[in-house]
Image 1 (cartoon, rainbow, N blue to C red):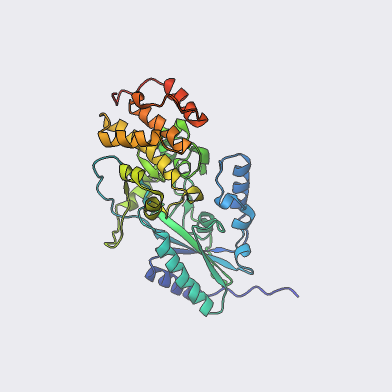
Image 2: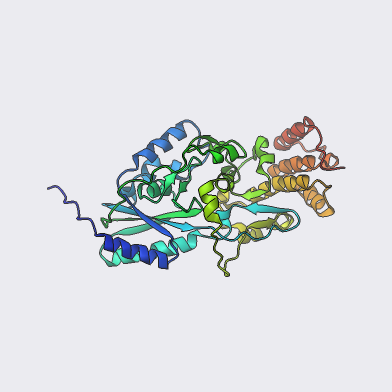
Length: 384
């Protein structure tokens, strides 16, 4: 006997869920069907075959699962997708060697998003439906759900752009057996001929409209373990976590950014003191930065990033490194971890302190860096 498709819930019920979401700090809600996201599945599989995912896992790990809501909730009928703005008033740029944090990570926006989603889940379950929330979870391609749910269109930077609001949003979903009324159709493209994000990417990572080469994307390279690619170190600039460039040049996002909001209780972590970070022990670093994605939960990778950024910041200041910078670099040139010694070699050379470079380190990673810096002319920004 064929199972009867449930009658769609009326719009009033969805309006009540939207109101509940707004009370919980969610800004926008849409509804997508719980069918397989075929477009996203094809894109994930194709880009994985082409190597555009680099070593990234996330939804690339199991595209079939992450594009099929019924894998998350059996008999799912709809996907309620939610967006929470992370536009906040930008703090003043501090003096000294500081690194920049991407806007979505200034505070933990996912915690209040999950709170709002769980309130919706409780309502759906109380009404007799199955419902499971997902936010920053590899089980769901939230951006595709947002597009299918009528929240926005895909920009050329591969972010979802909400009409009149841009892309500064974190996304989450509730997969449910409730037959919520789905969006009539996706939002029409609003980019037109604009390609400021493509032109503005510091590493030319947007290789086609909507297609990002992860192996060139600074946001991913900062998270990826291993040696930070030498050809992208200067382009990294002062970024320690994430990269906003393709969004901060986007006209719809820039217009909405002017309507910032500020919660006085928020501890905004927009800037990171580099010397303090590099002096910190593992426990301290995890306490301060453990909510970031760190490969294998290993703070070594944020130290690696900090060494690259420290060199960029000191070089760009156009003056010799002070005693504290020299002290920290000497410490890392003698560090037990070869990968940190290797990045300290690059950093010391980049600020013109070739006199600090080791002469008896036999580790292949360090030797490779020593050869590379020897082949480059000394920078004019530092003096020995």
